[in-house]
Image (cartoon, rainbow, N blue to C red; front, top):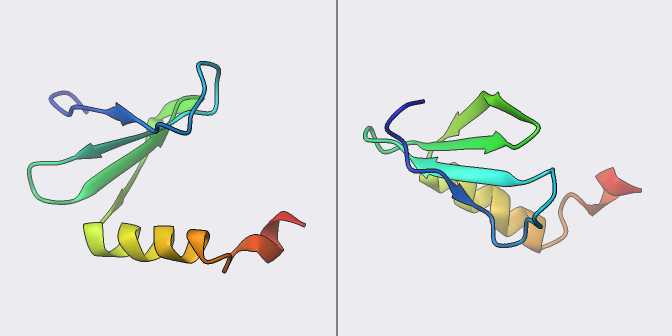
Length: 65
């Protein structure tokens, strides 16, 4: 994805397992993980916002136990 400006999550440490986001010219958000940077997810800003609100509200906590 040449030309994209990837930003690392402020919650990522200096080691592996870092999440990167980039805004694409067509308005979508690109997401990748440092261990497999060639795998890129694409979503809309609204859907990413809904996911983040759900994570913060604990809607997915049952998946980690």
